[in-house]
Length: 203
Image 1 (cartoon, rainbow, N blue to C red):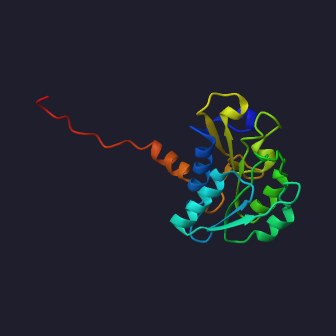
Image 2 (image 1 turned 90 degrees about the vertical axis):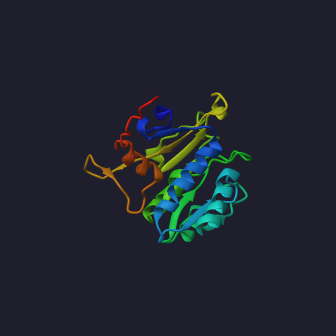
């Protein structure tokens, strides 16, 4: 899976469905952006797993949700996205290929202005994986999700990729301010030892 998506093996998290992968991406990343980045931008033709999760974030966390229309060709205009971006944007979500129209979005062109404004970029690539080349770094996305059954894998399999960036000219991973996710907190806790329990006698 990592080789298919141009990712590192440690960046891949397996889930039980594409919907769960989308939910994990949005609900893991958006609340962690803090109080200054409280808006999600998505296109109108996103999968319900993305749109409904965005609405759940609005209901549970007060996240503002902006849904952008697509043109007659099913594509999101990069200029429209750039105009909608603000300093409060936490995450932009755009699917790679439409699940109804098959329209291929210009993901790299859309991700560039979003990341330049400090927003995370999520791409639902369920309909594209295994059909068109995908590389998380070439696309410039932070989060990418795929579904196994869309490429003849067993049902109940999917994955989410959290791409880590390296700062230019260094070998260190670049950490964007406010971009911590629940996964990072889990990584921190993985190395901690749980307190020992005293053995109970008489058993």
